[in-house]
Length: 369
Image (cartoon, helix red, strand yellow):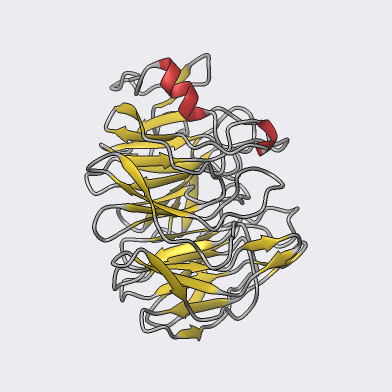
């Protein structure tokens, strides 16, 4: 393990004026022109999805302070290059994005901006053509929902915000073969700010959420392709606006969140699909929430967490600890995204505690993490 935070990795920030902390054996590499990089960096509540060739698709988000307006812009990060591709048909933020079994990407719901009604629309991105196609619509417009790929290639859409102070316990299932959504099983409670993960056996784990203003749920359930929903042992800590990631071992790491929309949780939990139970995981270095697409798995049951709180850290479930790898200026970066392409970690966007865009674009080699 490296002895200091700054010796672990190179991080290059493109924020109008660039700064870098570098290892002696690495040189900063700009991923793209400053104009495209600045446009990519100026967003929050977007999605980042890994494509079949290892490229990263960054779609939508809000692009102004306060998130009053969503953007339709879409980018592909390919190794150390950045390309602008076709816009989504409908600007959206706080949506979900799921990689389909055939390599395409499904985006669902979200909002056209703060204070707008949730969207019913969905679109599919084809990396072969670089274009989006509008597909079937949700029965209920929703944002703050969760989504996960099922083992039969369909996609589960669960819960979400459907109106002022109104959440839903409904789920819908998208079938790529027909391009349509159908009803799925009900959740134990109506929630938004929940999270979902695809389990190795083909089912999906759905956890947590907000059941009322500043009230968290500890609910956990497994939804399978046959349409069944089985409740499992609850979370050890009720939470919403948390994140989840599937580790190498097939275990699911549940990260941070909040129980009251004020204090940020440092706790993590690990779900074992065989025992269907949660156990306490390593404590985070910093409390974090608003973690959609802000966590990425690394080999060896580790995960990088790079949003929703201060700095960047690695959670090592096997070793039972978390450690910081980089301090960042500007405080929290809520609703930022993180992914890996061409052996490099990439962190994009986010907003601070005043909902001002942080205009963050960071890259780091992952070989020594």
